[in-house]
Image (tube, rainbow, N blue to C red; front, side, top):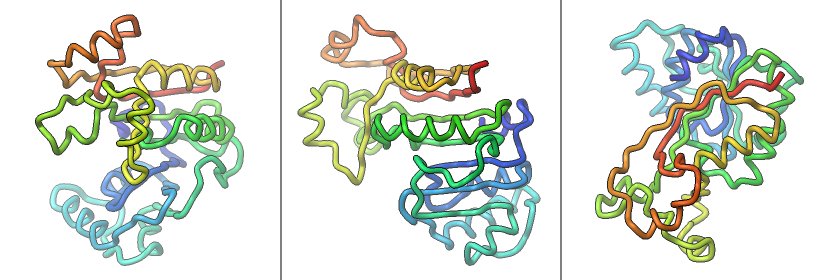
Length: 232
């Protein structure tokens, strides 16, 4: 999804990503198409054994930008990937209007709303006027990923105060729904140019349906791919 977006809008020079994770498989894949990737995390999470494993797996089917073994951050730079952690994405250390694109994959759902506002306010300044933001967001209850007995929207049955008890900081989930994200982005100054919603939960508990029946139906989405541009 990110590759198609970067190709379509010709935004492959400088790409910024927050919340990159441990293996950088996505970044290694994109290194064939993107000149430079600035990849950041709030905490250092990189596992170089995993990174090199992903490199070897990709080489089975694709020719990568480099073939050197990745043992450290200097080796990553051969792939045009610059990894920085710890890094606070509310303070992006790049020049204004210097980023062609920002990508994010299954990260935003783990960030509190207030911090999302700060990050995207900062992104708005750093993004080129013709740049894009490509976001993949997982709206589902992540506990359902390992427990088939609960709905993918199970966490919506809890009140705010109840959820605070279960919402451990190590596995924080903000529970924001699709329309809430769109509203945040719009207020900052972004316009949505692509808005693909995916609905993987067909059996939503009645309790949850009753609680959300008067709200925008996009609350039922379990994931989405969103592309943003600056408003004219």
